[in-house]
Structures are given as C-alpha cells and as structure tokens.
Length: 335
Image: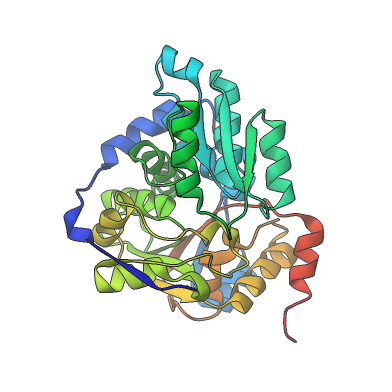
C-alpha cells in the first residue's frame, strides 16, 4: 500500500450537494429504485447492546445502492447527450448501475473494468448491455485510462462517486432511513470514495442534527479515515482488501469537503471483522451480502463503535458476491 498525500485540503472545496438536491433526486428516481426494507434482529440487538436497524440495499435493483446515483445522473442528460453515450469506470457495482440506467434511458454505456473484477459483477454489467474495456491495474489506473479513452471516443465520463448528481442519488438511502427513524442516535455507513457516506450524512444531519454519523473503512484501505482526521487528502494504491467496493484510491473533490463537514467520525475494521460481519448476516439474518456490504456493521459487531442503549442505523450497501467466492472467504475465518 502506498501512502501518498495530496496538497489539497477539505476546506478548499465547496459543499456541492444540499439536502434539497437529495429531495429532488428522490423524486427523479422514485419510479425506478426500490424503497428497500429496514430489518431488525433481536440477536443482533443482544450482541451489540443497542437497537439496530439495517437498511438493506443488497435488495436494491442491481444488488446495491449504486442505481440511485447512476439513474439520477443519467436522467439529466439531454437528447443529444443520450445519443452520444457515456463512459464510466468501476470494479462492478457502479458499472452495473450505469449499465442498467443507460438501458432504461436509451444511453449507450462503455465501462472500464479491472481484469480481476468479480465475475458476477462483470457478467451482470454485460447483461445490461454495456461495452466493457478491461485493463490491468498493475499497468495503469482507471482514472488515467478513462481520460485517454474519453478523448479517443469523445465520451463524457460519469465517475462512480465524485459527482453531485451521484452523491445526491446516494443520499436518498439516508433520507429513506431517517424518514422512517428520525430519532436515530447513530448512523454507520461504509466508505469507499465517499459518495454514499457524504450523501447519507447530508440527509441524516438535515433530518436529525443530533444523529452521530460514522464512516467505516477497511484497515487496509484507510485513506478516507486518515484524510478525515488530518484534514488533508490521503490516498492508497491498490489496497489489498476483500471489500472491493472500498478499494478506491482517495476521496473526491466533492465528497471530501462534504464528509469533513457532515460526518462525526471515521473508523477502520480488520479483514477478519468484515468476514465475521458478512457471515453473521448470511447465517443469522439470511441476508446475502458482499464484503463491502457488511463493512459498516463490522464496526458495531467487533466493538470498534460502542453504542449501548442507542438506536443505530446501519447501511448494508450491497450483495453482489459470487457464491463460490463467498464460501472461500468464510473458510478463512479463524476459530
């Protein structure tokens, strides 16, 4: 893992997304996305000493929250822009969301994906009609490759998290959760590039300013946590974590200032904690969840976040995982 530090600070950016933008996004996506359920468990409450409410975006269309931001962004394209198409880059979940949104809106989609992207995510992206361009992460970065291909194909780039319409769409997850539970004491959200975390934190603080927002990252991909605590943008290079949705190299120019402004704390958890959280959700709650989807709950289950006698919301961000891969991961858990 490489620890590079940029010269930018959170204070240099402006808050590019408001709660009004999230409310507008809710209307835009209302007929497309599912209003995912909140799930509770007496076993989970007993284990953690608090009242836990899981927002199950693993049951969303395409299997993650990503459809919210993707559809919100692509729906703003004009007629001529829709004919031209769009380019994006993703290890899988954003790719699927943009591909499905493009098919619904009649927009051709090209996706840059790493060669080692999960097969289940690549197959779904192709099934939704996208054109995939593979690359080797050891040879180039997806950001550099996307800029080159964007120029070659004359296509606009829709990034996976650092875009105001993406953030606003993802913020509808938190809005739905807080509308149903306005008295939440704590909200836990996983963090990769920060689109989901920043959007949910805007919604939560707008509905309940006293709700404490905590972002959760893997120990091995802790760039956002270090950035949050230092006030300067840190990055990582190809972090080695099973949570592929959290392998983003750094927070964005849009998401970093929002997280610094709205989020109360950032914490990290071990790979073992992520696996145990994932296994708990599969075994005890019958929820098929990918490692990144179990990331936020891991901080509560392993005691990194203590919230005794509190009402806690946890975003379960996604469930796209190959079954064989899941069982292989579970075999790594130490007795």
